[in-house]
Length: 112
Image 1 (cartoon, helix red, strand yellow):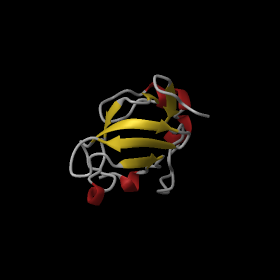
Image 2 (tube, rainbow, N blue to C red):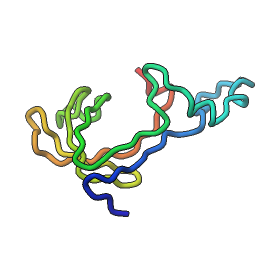
Image 3 (cartoon, helix red, strand yellow):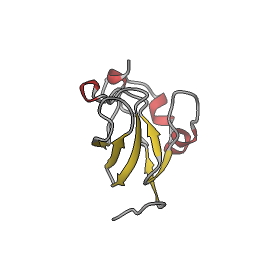
Image 4 (cartoon, rainbow, N blue to C red):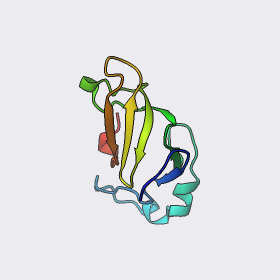
Protein backbone atom coordinates (compact mmCIF):
# COMPACT_ATOMS: atom_id res chain seq x y z
CA UNK A 1 0.00 0.00 0.00
CA UNK A 2 1.42 3.37 -1.03
CA UNK A 3 0.81 6.45 1.09
CA UNK A 4 1.08 9.83 -0.66
CA UNK A 5 1.74 13.31 0.77
CA UNK A 6 -1.21 14.51 2.81
CA UNK A 7 -2.65 11.04 3.33
CA UNK A 8 -2.51 9.60 6.83
CA UNK A 9 -1.77 6.15 8.20
CA UNK A 10 -2.90 4.91 11.56
CA UNK A 11 -0.65 2.83 13.81
CA UNK A 12 -2.06 0.88 16.78
CA UNK A 13 -0.25 -0.20 19.93
CA UNK A 14 -0.48 -3.72 21.29
CA UNK A 15 -3.63 -4.85 23.05
CA UNK A 16 -2.03 -7.44 25.32
CA UNK A 17 -0.10 -7.47 28.57
CA UNK A 18 3.39 -8.94 28.44
CA UNK A 19 3.52 -11.60 31.11
CA UNK A 20 6.97 -12.89 30.16
CA UNK A 21 8.28 -11.77 33.56
CA UNK A 22 6.39 -14.71 35.08
CA UNK A 23 4.21 -12.61 37.37
CA UNK A 24 1.18 -14.64 38.36
CA UNK A 25 -1.80 -12.44 39.11
CA UNK A 26 -5.52 -12.76 38.53
CA UNK A 27 -5.71 -9.03 37.79
CA UNK A 28 -4.06 -9.63 34.37
CA UNK A 29 -7.05 -11.73 33.33
CA UNK A 30 -9.43 -8.87 34.16
CA UNK A 31 -7.67 -6.19 32.08
CA UNK A 32 -9.42 -6.02 28.71
CA UNK A 33 -8.21 -4.51 25.41
CA UNK A 34 -11.00 -1.93 25.70
CA UNK A 35 -9.56 -0.76 29.04
CA UNK A 36 -5.99 -0.67 27.67
CA UNK A 37 -7.15 1.42 24.71
CA UNK A 38 -8.85 3.94 26.98
CA UNK A 39 -5.64 4.83 28.88
CA UNK A 40 -4.39 8.35 28.08
CA UNK A 41 -2.28 9.20 31.12
CA UNK A 42 1.04 11.01 31.01
CA UNK A 43 3.89 8.76 29.99
CA UNK A 44 1.69 6.23 28.20
CA UNK A 45 1.19 6.72 24.44
CA UNK A 46 -2.32 6.85 23.06
CA UNK A 47 -3.71 3.68 21.50
CA UNK A 48 -3.80 5.20 18.00
CA UNK A 49 -1.08 7.20 16.35
CA UNK A 50 -2.01 8.94 13.08
CA UNK A 51 0.89 10.10 10.91
CA UNK A 52 1.16 11.89 7.54
CA UNK A 53 3.99 12.12 5.03
CA UNK A 54 5.94 15.41 5.19
CA UNK A 55 4.92 15.92 8.82
CA UNK A 56 7.67 16.80 11.33
CA UNK A 57 8.05 14.42 14.29
CA UNK A 58 10.35 14.25 17.33
CA UNK A 59 11.89 11.12 18.81
CA UNK A 60 10.91 10.48 22.40
CA UNK A 61 13.40 7.66 22.90
CA UNK A 62 17.08 7.08 22.19
CA UNK A 63 17.23 4.77 19.16
CA UNK A 64 20.86 5.01 18.02
CA UNK A 65 23.05 7.61 19.68
CA UNK A 66 25.97 6.98 17.29
CA UNK A 67 23.77 8.14 14.39
CA UNK A 68 22.33 11.04 16.38
CA UNK A 69 18.92 9.42 16.85
CA UNK A 70 18.38 10.54 20.42
CA UNK A 71 15.49 11.78 22.51
CA UNK A 72 14.53 15.17 21.03
CA UNK A 73 15.84 14.54 17.49
CA UNK A 74 13.60 16.07 14.84
CA UNK A 75 12.63 14.24 11.66
CA UNK A 76 10.28 14.66 8.68
CA UNK A 77 8.26 11.62 7.63
CA UNK A 78 9.04 10.44 4.08
CA UNK A 79 7.44 6.97 3.98
CA UNK A 80 4.80 5.08 5.91
CA UNK A 81 4.57 1.27 5.79
CA UNK A 82 2.87 -1.30 8.00
CA UNK A 83 5.86 -1.92 10.28
CA UNK A 84 8.35 0.80 9.27
CA UNK A 85 8.40 4.60 9.16
CA UNK A 86 10.89 6.30 6.83
CA UNK A 87 12.08 9.76 7.88
CA UNK A 88 14.70 12.39 7.05
CA UNK A 89 16.77 13.82 9.91
CA UNK A 90 16.45 17.63 10.08
CA UNK A 91 18.62 18.42 13.12
CA UNK A 92 22.13 17.65 14.30
CA UNK A 93 25.25 16.46 12.53
CA UNK A 94 23.34 13.79 10.57
CA UNK A 95 20.89 16.30 9.09
CA UNK A 96 19.64 15.12 5.69
CA UNK A 97 20.17 11.41 6.36
CA UNK A 98 17.28 9.04 5.56
CA UNK A 99 16.49 6.64 8.41
CA UNK A 100 13.94 3.90 9.01
CA UNK A 101 12.21 3.29 12.32
CA UNK A 102 10.84 -0.22 12.73
CA UNK A 103 8.04 -1.32 15.04
CA UNK A 104 9.38 -2.09 18.51
CA UNK A 105 8.12 -4.32 21.26
CA UNK A 106 8.48 -3.11 24.81
CA UNK A 107 8.33 -4.94 28.11
CA UNK A 108 8.95 -4.17 31.76
CA UNK A 109 12.53 -5.42 31.47
CA UNK A 110 13.22 -2.76 28.79
CA UNK A 111 11.93 0.13 30.91
CA UNK A 112 14.50 2.54 32.34
